[in-house]
Image 1: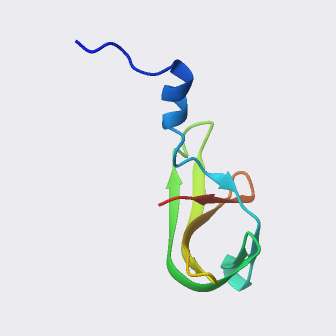
Image 2: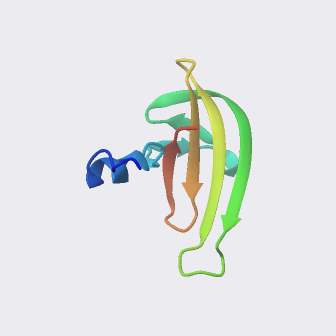
Length: 91
């Protein structure tokens, strides 16, 4: 049997590697992102919507975009309809 390794805080933070981060987003017509964190969006690669847990007190209603920024980076950004704000999240 292997004893637990690492502290409790290290184990908790390991689950947050892909945690969403607030983002500054300027959107165009139809809600498509044009600027993400002050960097111009050059291409929207994909768009999808997630609606889940609508039966709970914490429903999820998000519109995701995978975009390419001016510098060539791919970024996944979403608008949370419940919170009315934007977030970035690593894919």
